[in-house]
Amino acid sequence: MSNPSELVTDAVLREWRLPEPGESKKSRGEVVVVGGARSSPGAVILAGEAALRVGAGRVALAVPASIDAHVGIALPEAGIYALPDDADAPLEGRLGAHLGSADAVLIGPGFDDPDETRATVLAVADTGPAYLVLDAFAVGVLPDLDRSALPSTLILSANKEEAAILLGRPLADGDELTDLLEIARRYDAVVSCYETTTHPDGRSWRIPEGGPGLGTSGSGDVRAGAIAGFAARGVEPERAAIWGAWTHAAAGMRLTERIGLGFLARELAAELTPTMTDVLRD
Image (cartoon, rainbow, N blue to C red; front, top):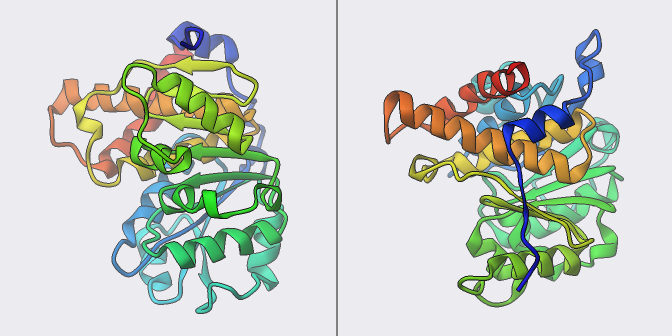
């Protein structure tokens, strides 16, 4: 059995605080979200909005050319880049430079093809991002990648099915923490899976669960975007993952209390800001 995880409370988060916002959007960091498909264009929009809602200063979305105009209209606050039609093509020019200079890059929301996702993760890694967050299909393809090809700072935002892919078997009933710690060590990454966050050095944290309302389409995209937003603001990886997971869960509990089961992921994204503000104010 693993050692007990540290419980993350409002008091712990207030003690951690967040970096000072500075005087401009540039001082709050920039996120690039890479993802999307014709079948799921909304995922990158939700992730991008979530990053902005937790205080990231700027967001850009890199999506297939078939949906770039639609995504740009849906989230006018974001810069938009079209991914190459060939997923194996290098990411050069303005997009490549943007990925290399961003404070955090999130890959995965909305991708629906594992081969294209795998090629895109490698192409993004070749641009030299300092801080990478993987979500959804980008987590699922990780066992097929050379870990040394990815940035040293890596966060995995995984559900239990994706965690099982990383582990190579289902999570153990009653001792999921041991398995999540093994994933963190194996991939030298911070792992955020539901209420648990694990670090390669053996530390772990637990947040209160957000309730059944979080089990809705797009919820995971909001969570991953929030994690990337905190990362872009300069929060260290494990705390960025915890802040993102906690704010996502607490926002879900607030919505459940106020409107009941059946809220939408875009409502969840909008609730992140007052949730974060209230815990820091108390």
